[in-house]
Length: 167
Ligand code: FES
Image 1 (cartoon, rainbow, N blue to C red):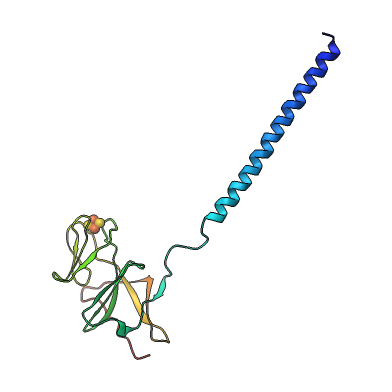
Image 2 (image 1 turned 180 degrees about the horizontal axis):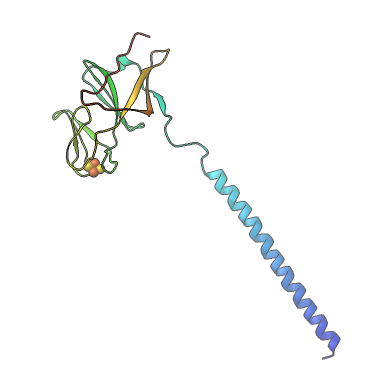
């Protein structure tokens, strides 16, 4: 084969390789951009964390002696003769949701048998500390507002109660 034919064949092969490489690179970039667009479209842009301050109804929606579990917020609103308090339902051991046992007047954790008294103090089992208390207040319209970013410190005595006024 003459030298000129060899060069022409090599040139064709190089050009073909370059075009192949160029096509695959272009396809890869286009596919990457498409994938990014799909992920951006599918992923929600809203936070799934509940708002820190949430209206939980009017004080009269709760009867004295009632312990109400708000599943969406994972907390309890408790009303007794002295007022209101709000408490996390998340066990301080490994985070399972505790349940209120009306007969024993205790919060019980189904996971490892942790027990809390009616004010959320850990009294038995593995939980290392009491359930968290959240601040309660009332807005201008009379709604009870629970603020999960405002953790109330526990003292030695009874849990502080919120006493709503008339809106
Ligand atoms: S998670 Fe509640 S006792 Fe372990």
